[in-house]
Image 1 (spheres, rainbow over the protein chains, first blue to last red):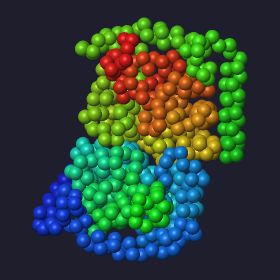
Image 2 (cartoon, one colour):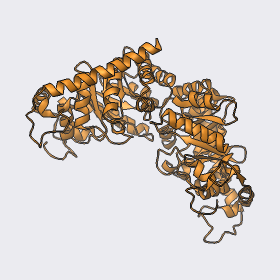
Image 3 (cartoon, chains in turn orange, blue):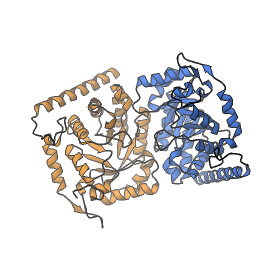
Image 4 (tube, rainbow over the protein chains, first blue to last red):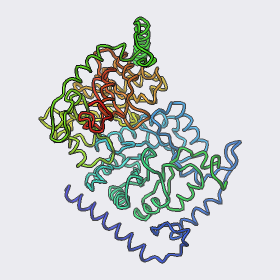
Length: 291
Length: 291
């Protein structure tokens, strides 16, 4: 059985990589030198996504007093995030209140803070996301699964787990797959996002990490913890989207600080944005340009 | 009952701080300007510790070929540490083999790696230390307690947990105390070290963190995760030693890279050193001077 799992994981990883390369070779490219991202996964190759974000960009609604127009389309896909270990109750209360005010998809918090946030958000439609095995991904599988169950008991609606990075880089795919699968089982029917920590991985690692997350039943793959090297890039999001296909979400997180960056990540294939600067992203405050 | 706990914690914190201040005021100081650390907790005020480390410094034994004399006295109090999330099996095997070769007190690893290390070290007398709730300390109390139980099932001999930093900074001492107590109960009879992340705390936070750890039954207080701001300092170690008294250990960790630094921390009151550069510390390779 364990051997079967390993073979399955290897086969999935090989298959998705082969399909990706074939697809890229088969697609003629019209990108200019300026538009090209080098790996064929740029916005030019993905016109549907570009159109989608352009359409999204046209929708703006008024919101809270004093901050001008707010991007409700972006707000609805933002996990409003506070993962600093020294976050106080006041910080968490403000996080929840901002999420309610701007109608963010959720708040994303450490598991010790789930109960507090879930109670504050109860009945609002704004979800509570718990990170698990965060941020190193190096807790034991049993511990991750238990932390997941406890977070859901405390009111979490979604789980963002960190992949076992050591096992992934060591090509121990069975361990990676079983680790994710245990959390997916523990969370069921709640969705699980798998954080790859893309800034710590080479291209193979990202491809295989996505393949394993999908094979294990993850609802999303996610770029970064925000505590590791690097953050969300357009190239990584496009690669991840190409690997997981249309039935798995892609969450871009880490270093997303303005609406323009968020738009570019959505154009590349992100269906969720993780950010602490969410208010700046939707209101344009702190944004570099545009709106 | 919960109210009782809160009152107890507050009383303990107040008592230790008062006692500390009284002790300092009562002790005449002979430190020169150069020796003074500013808070009265310097080596001059602690001659016993200085003598202890001087005696320790006199003991040197030969060890593995090619590296010259090795400090066996320091080796015996070093937790040889590898907490990088991308550590491979090869890295962990090397960690264990170095711990065996130099007779370090233990290896200190993430909980996902406990089983591997404990099996490799079985019967050797070199212990396996698992970090729990690492490095943010922001996992739920139930999750930390479970991770502890699982680590011990997997072969851990000691637990290094991270304190709930948000609760400590928010002066929610009941939560801090119950969090530590749950892990102490889960680990019993194995010892628990409580990581304060001193670089993120002001003096009050360090004093109260130590008092709560002691009140909750911790075997050690420990300075730093190595992932947060700052690392072990002589001043923090001396302060922690003054708070916890002689029946609780103090582990200095974070940024300890040479034997001279390790000696200064021991002189200040550390009874355990956490380091990745353990081989350099005991062999003088990479050390700045002295031996």
